[in-house]
Amino acid sequence: MIKPSKKKVALHIQKLRDTIDAYKTASQAALINKLNPIVRGWCNYYSRVCSKQTFASCDKVLFSQLRAWARYRTGKI
Image 1 (spheres, rainbow, N blue to C red):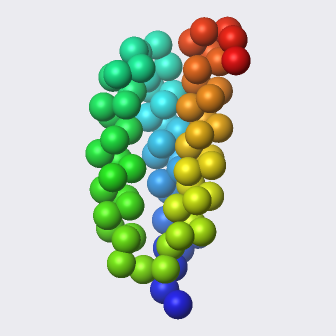
Image 2 (cartoon, rainbow, N blue to C red):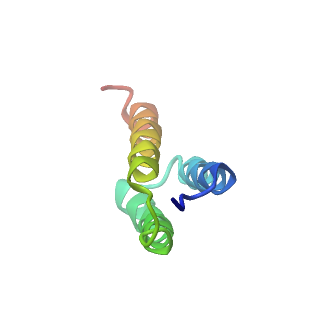
């Protein structure tokens, strides 16, 4: 079975984290517009291999990062 390497998954998560940190004070729409091509491109690249579990774990990590971003922005949730 071919899966995305742990190193590439870690680099993808780090790139998402860096992007979210760079857009800490930006609007929600600006952050979404910046993250969309990153996530879509990575998922399209690895769509031909067995990566369902990898996508699920990356989704979980991205959700927690965005939730932390929302808490920072609003002070709620």
